[in-house]
Image (cartoon, rainbow, N blue to C red):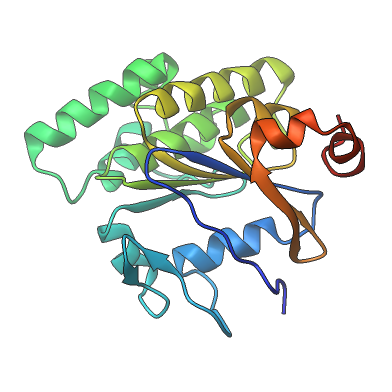
Length: 219
């Protein structure tokens, strides 16, 4: 069992960050919410509905989208084809509007519409993974380690996009090793260690405690 005694809630329009070292259990929690791994006990509630036993695609239709660790776009499809898959449930006009919005967030994707995903750089693949998650009717955006393996300039760019999404009141659940960056965007924070949440609270409250900063947040 990868995680135990994990419990938290996320309000609509807010961003909750789960931080912790590699192997702490962050990805397992996200995958459980998305339905990619089984839950042995407890429940996953979304908008008041128990979704614990729903399939991943059923959760997706309810508006839950995930940006997986390592991006993982469909390698042998173009940028545009990847985005079209994300927009499959939309009518043409809504899909077009969502595509335009994604291209505003990531102008480089607009420049590479016809390019195969496997030929993109690491940063561009991450942009595409985020864009693919956004083009649907997303109500909850789950993001797993968006800074992983990226150069500092691209990490800053990714978090600038996250700030824009937050300004648009998108509900976001973010798992991230880069604690400093996560704290810059999060309303609330959960600290994970060895598969359990050992600390949680409002971001500013945690930052204001010197003892907590040094012991758990590494800042």
